[in-house]
Length: 87
Picture 1 (cartoon, rainbow, N blue to C red):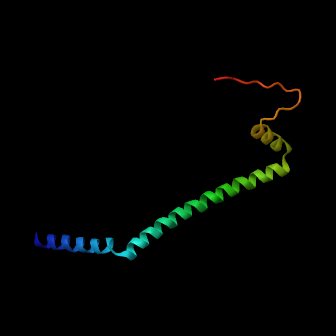
Picture 2: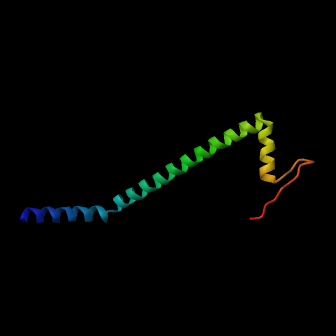
Picture 3: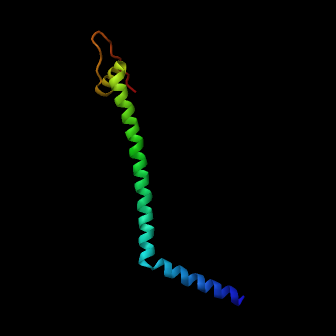
């Protein structure tokens, strides 16, 4: 029983030293920042890949350009009938 208390006290002291040490807190903050930056880089790479595909389609497929213009600018071709539905 006495060995258990001594181990518990030593563990508590080590934990307090680690918790109140500025170096360890700084290390944890840097690790958190690193994870956020890695996630940001991953998102940027995904967006870059999507934009590259979009550029390729714009340069090589005329129907893609037409579809983009219709969707983003709400353009209709001459002679087409536009149907609008109210919800």
